[in-house]
Length: 109
Image (cartoon, rainbow, N blue to C red; front, side, top):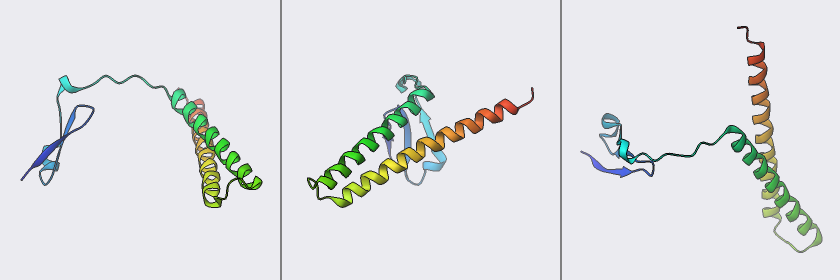
């Protein structure tokens, strides 16, 4: 028994239902769309930018709460936690990248 296939935006057809494991993914070369190349520095720079934006939003909400123009303490706390988590993510990625660099540096050729 097979349920209709779902057409993915990338042109990869994936079947769903009971026979999905047996049929797997079917790719038609004419449906594949070329995607633009994205470098790691673009992705990491975007993460840094998003963390900075989250920090600015959290600061603005904290100042508005302190002035009394905003009474949403839950939203302010959530914005602050989002900024903290974003900054932690950027720091973790940086540390992992430096660890990988140092590991490559120590590798004997």
